[in-house]
Length: 180
Image 1 (cartoon, rainbow, N blue to C red):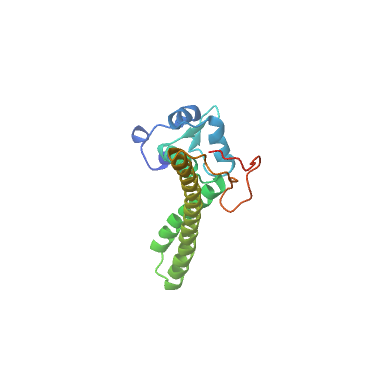
Image 2 (cartoon, rainbow, N blue to C red; image 1 turned 90 degrees about the vertical axis):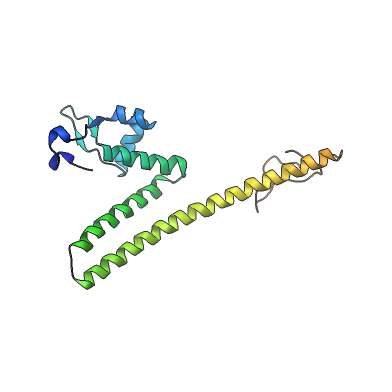
C-alpha cells in the first residue's frame, strides 16, 4: 500500500505494526487479515526482516473500512473488493485528469469515472433494496404478533393460519396451527 519511508524522514514516520497488533485493535483475526490479502483487498505496507507482515496507519484504516462494510453494512467481500477497486481507480483518474490538458483524454477519464461511480451507486442501492425487503418482512412479523395480542386481549383464541414468508410457500413444519 503506502510506502511512507520513501517520502517521510524515518523519525517522523508512523510506526509499522505487526499483524497481531492490528488484529487485536480491530477485533479481527490474523487469519482474516491474511485472507483479505489473498483476495486482494489489502497489501501490507512492508515485511520485517523475519518476514512478518507490517502495517502502516493507512492499512489499518483500510482494514477498519473493510470490517465496517462487512460487519455493519453486510457487504460481501466481492462487493467490498469492487467498491475498493472503483474508489482506487477514481483516485488514479483524478490524478490523470490533473496531468493532462487534452480534452478527449479528459472526457475519457470522466466517462470511466462516471461508470465506476454509477456501479458504486447501483451496489449501494441494491443493498438498500435488500435491507428494505428485510425490514418489510420484520414489520410483517411484528404486525402478525400484534394481531395475536389483540385477539388474546379480546379473550379470543388466535385465528389459525399458515405462516409464510413474504410471497413464499408455507414454512417447513407449518401445520396451520397458530403460533407466534
